[in-house]
Image 1 (spheres, rainbow, N blue to C red):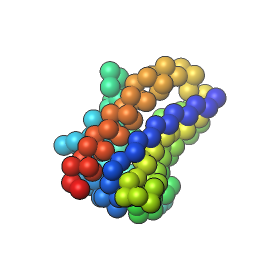
Image 2: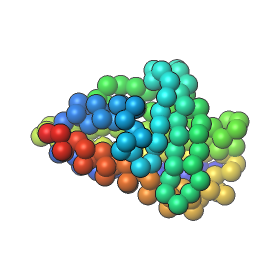
Image 3: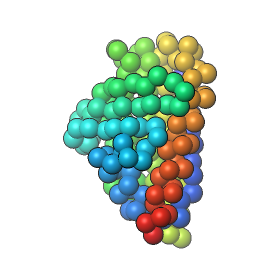
Length: 146
């Protein structure tokens, strides 16, 4: 079973400005309403520690593997619940340069595994809402600092 959720927002700031905020992991507790922390060496092939707290749902700390970390363009990881195949999530942040000093920020996640059907409502509601809240806060911060 698979499920994908995706959100995007247009930010009136350049990709490098958005990237600087997105990758300032030490400040996540100060502004990010969804991803409370990211710790460790963020580099392709490395495992990091991430704490996610979707609105109106239990938080979760996990150890995803970084799949992509391309400055001003994308940051992607894959995480697993307990063991691969039960509930896997490939999280993707994408920055699209619109060529007019604005950036389209897209946040998505592809979920796979035998437990996905049991989490469908939570993913569609709580997790997606967490994405939207984070996107909106990122937009506010990036546009404030222009």
